[in-house]
Length: 247
Image (tube, rainbow, N blue to C red):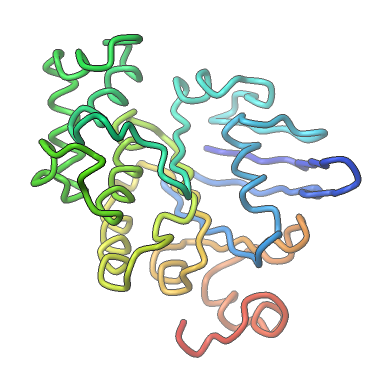
């Protein structure tokens, strides 16, 4: 579904990703781990099309999207959530979801508040809200809801575009243990025809959700394998991931 081949990216003298390669099969849940500065966010920016690689290729369902702009990748089924909220604070939760769904479907391209006019868009909003437990908040302005709800809405915006692959950048960042547990359950319950690539620091989420784990360090892939193999890796435990006692 998503094939990453030998991605390299430097910023001046700083080599951020080095020959990064991996493949996600349809429906796979893969977690990207690594210490701060490992190149995880840069990798996501490359995959989403926000920056261009110096070398390497990115294929989505066999189609080369290495040079494709962000909007084209989105139309082809690649969606992304961000570590920092990127929401329309002046709109309601429903309008945010509706705008994402409407733009993805071509129902609207310029007028924000007509997003909920189409029945198909309203159906998508209702479905996504129910899946992410956002239904009680649909009428609330985003600026008035809690940080946790905003994190859920970030994921909702990605889901509302009806993607085939979602890149989730630290979805549990900044939320408490109780809501993090809810995120674990939510991600585990997503349809298996949806492919997930997740950057995460939460070891519980990584081992609960992942089919495979890829570890970056200094921009290089130093481990790629099953969660049990990652858990038992002395290299990862001692050098990269710290204590596994609570994992």
